[in-house]
Image 1 (cartoon, rainbow, N blue to C red):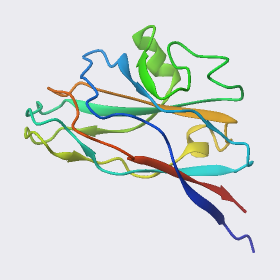
Image 2 (cartoon, one colour; image 1 turned 90 degrees about the vertical axis):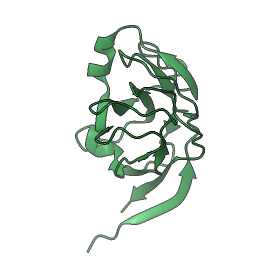
Image 3 (tube, rainbow, N blue to C red; image 1 turned 45 degrees about the vertical axis):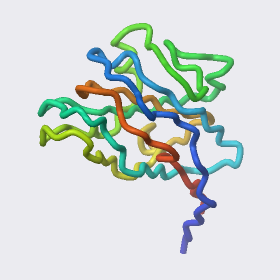
Length: 162
């Protein structure tokens, strides 16, 4: 019998408060990279509800979250505007989004400002064919009508071993 062992919960520095809208989704925010130095076979990422801005968005607009992974540090080997340091990220072109692993977007279905948007917990290894990358980071962008509200400590993960 195999038993899953979950690590402690670790916060991921990811400053999305007041993140401005980007019609092309190429201007957003990146998280600090996470290094899998503990040798986890997976990481379960939890995202607490994200507060939209007070201006009512338009039905069909959305908030996107993507994950990038590689076996070298993003700090020393950045990819197309993502350097693994919590802060603004400007992707070199829209096709960069095609090379990132998308998480199901939070889509606007009610045109009301100040709503909470949700992302389900997700497995990092599953995004990469069951293989856990040595380094991973997240990128968020949205095309809502206004900047996001105050959102602190929204992202965390726990490592998984067996």
